Length: 55
Image (cartoon, rainbow, N blue to C red; front, side, top):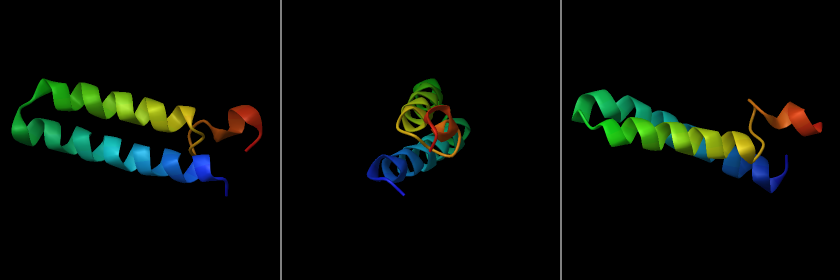
């Protein structure tokens, strides 16, 4: 596993945490931040997008 994969997994987990907190805190920006962090995690080669470049 490459280093970028670990960063990607961590980013996706943090993003999901923000998505879970958004309804509890009633803050719309948590939802947007969660989606942005998940997208960043995908870019870094997570289980969602790693196959794009043969991970």
